[in-house]
Length: 120
Image (cartoon, rainbow, N blue to C red):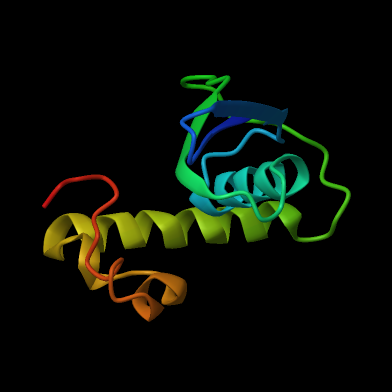
């Protein structure tokens, strides 16, 4: 995807939508970072949030992004992160979503074991 969109709903059920372009990616970490940046940049601090939705668009199926890497090792680092995310997805598929979670999720008892993909 090359575009990240967020929708934020406040306590009064008002919806706000924001989007930004990103370098083409299929990595969850890149998408989450862009979504968090959009939220922090645009949504007023201190206003209660009822819902945050994240979507992506701008898919380019069956093609590979070709770039001239300016940073040494940037391509290898992306491929390493891609392999790591793929391994996490396979483990979650085999043993359940809650078997591998980010540390920030484990800190919150209400979020522990939550399957955001709803595949329980």
